[in-house]
Image (cartoon, rainbow, N blue to C red; front, top):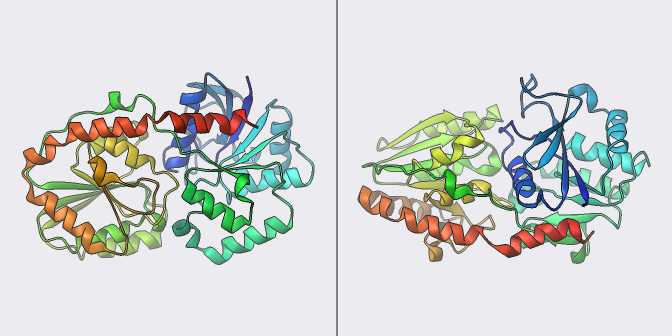
Length: 382
């Protein structure tokens, strides 16, 4: 059995970092009987000053089908990371960011200096080369891309991994790679998710939710601009951690500009085990993201029967044909508003009646054996 040593900036029990941790966990749960997974991560959540209270440090901790090593800040130096890689037998080193300064860039530097010599390396940018997110602070990112290429950080034996063909195109273009160097394997959904899907009673007013990290690329401000155009009464809840005070101030100003018939609330972040319960309490998930390499929250929403109203900047396409939602051109905000008004015009019973069909369609979409096999061959073909 091959051993995969995974470096990921933040992992469970934390939940503030969003989808990357969920992607890694889902991969482990699906493939943990075929590969031995060792996960290295920080000992605290994104933005936290203190470590997890009940998580041991300095040892490997069993979590599901993997073992996890939680590193304190003093263990994140070059020498400490080199010692950890040297003393941890593995067949594949898997990096889960392109721009992370510690869990990717330091390891690439150690490889370039010859301090560590992994047999195989998988690089998963996790959406960082999708056009929308890449445009944010692009000059700084472009400078690092060029400098790291000139420094020889990326050997010919490195396997690049994209979560969609769209992301693969972005990687090829930005890194000027041959297309065959990038392998597409869509992120795997949560296993046995249907068992976590509670039923929610219908409500008179349309219930709309935005559930994500509150960052510019997730486009909460775009969601608020859409809601300024709706004509019918509806409730709008925002769920997720604030990461950028400047951006949140912009969104808070837009909240004050919503029409009186739109009642909005900010509910803060929620733990991963509570996401399904929260999503099940809404009629539609509004997510006009600037770009997603996958979008786990989309899968989680349709799993519980809550339709999604999203941009076309994700791998989730053809949603209306499947009856699970709508994927619209982000430039046409009026189209988003029309869908919301149409839903608000329906009776609560009519909105609730479609939930079982959404769940069935979601199960069909999420049980794709090709996706599982593509993730399997990401490791087994190395």
